[in-house]
Image (cartoon, helix red, strand yellow):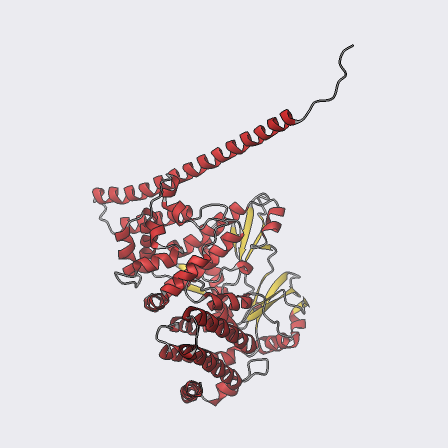
Length: 544
């Protein structure tokens, strides 16, 4: 154990000199220096690494021993994230959402980090504000809530009222010291993950650390977040079903973001949504259409659509319909045209059970000729046999039904077994894939969680199918000569084929629901009739 620990310490300390002593002694706003956070990280990493190494000398079933080591490692990592805070919370939250990639013990234990984080004091908030604007909060706002209305790993949000316009706003304030401490923390996390891969070649999650190193500086720039928000709004066009807050640029800097205060209920509070007279099916449809357009049409993706970042309220013009508010625009990913098209073709192939299309598009996304089935399984959370399998039921032969994550089904145990069985292959595949796909997969996981919370009220794959068929048609037509009517006909017929599939599926679903409703009605009538027969009539006296 000491040998492992000193190898980690020596590597980190030697390389740490590149950043200079200032990064290691600088506090993070809670009085914790970079050196303390580094020392904690090294200690935990050496304990976890030694624990796995010692498994080979322990008596017992290897699978049981490995799972116990996962449990201990997850608890140690959770404690490290909670103590170090900031970037470590963000990193732990990312790991917690990778239930199809890492051992279940880590996802389950680290999921507690997805709950509300510890808030910073109002004195720290005031200090950040003075640093950014050279004036106190009270000179800018007539009221400012001392208790935050939302707390995250990088910032917290307070409600306030502007002095000049009396307008209620939401003020997002970055945690004190985070900008200064982030460089050393990124270095520490990246180095530890690289060293873990050196000690355990099958453990290759350098891509997570690399993504964090690339995206964290962007998430810490609130001016960029405001620009992301406004670009998202432009892409939404004239839609009033999904909206974003207004940015107040006069009170916005890289560490403070002031926006219009938006009322609404968090999207996971389904009972409250239904209590407003709103249909979860409409909510699910808006979410699906918005993010399908972001991925396949615009190529500009909001990568953190968890339950706390989407609000639901009554539409101001149509009170029986929902209006959604998309919040927290710090993490976006640009999806290049080539990626968009390959990804669209991949899903088109999955929905039409076209193995050659799945394979060719998967290769375009970084998979090799053999691992495309594994990539398809990771995207759909289904085994390859489930993806291409044929059922005797007509409805089940349609891909929209086979690939759907139905409400009430739980394939978590099957997925955990899949991860355990193919862990090295999954790790290697993730390392070779474009970074865009990694964040798309993370976004898809968040959207699935929301859809499950809503009760999976409709098959969202039909909305995806409509979007990708339009995108593929536009791409196909753009590459044709105006007079090539034969190729034009082929492209349009492919789109028509997809729309026929969608329409046929919707008809079958409607027919199935009608038959269930009729069957339920007859069953109730039969129960009423049987009850009437079994109930004795009133007693009467025989006629005299």
